Image (cartoon, rainbow, N blue to C red):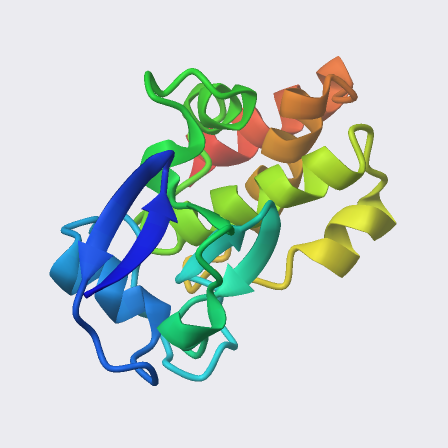
Length: 165
């Protein structure tokens, strides 16, 4: 049995060393908020944090996580759903289908930790997740709102676009 510190709790697993972290989280630990998208680290639906850094867990072997490292999944982002990003996502109706959004939120949280007031270029550089519904403008607005850098005009455009959809 091996151990992982996930969302502040030390958990046991018996996965093979080359098993992707995603499958340990979902199948052995029951944390299904992290999604499987592409399996080749391109889409980002599987993004979690390892010691605060965003990691595409679908290709990250569980053996690469050291016992001292802390894993944070979408379930651990905020115990009560009150993280500024989660609040902004809800206020702006960011997701459509929502499948990619846990990975999107985790990537955005890592960005805001590194750059609390990100520019559009910072967001473009850091948020490489793929959203098949194309909610990129809403994602950008959500990140800016959570960072406190959103202008009222940008929020109005997002709401106008949403109401016309």
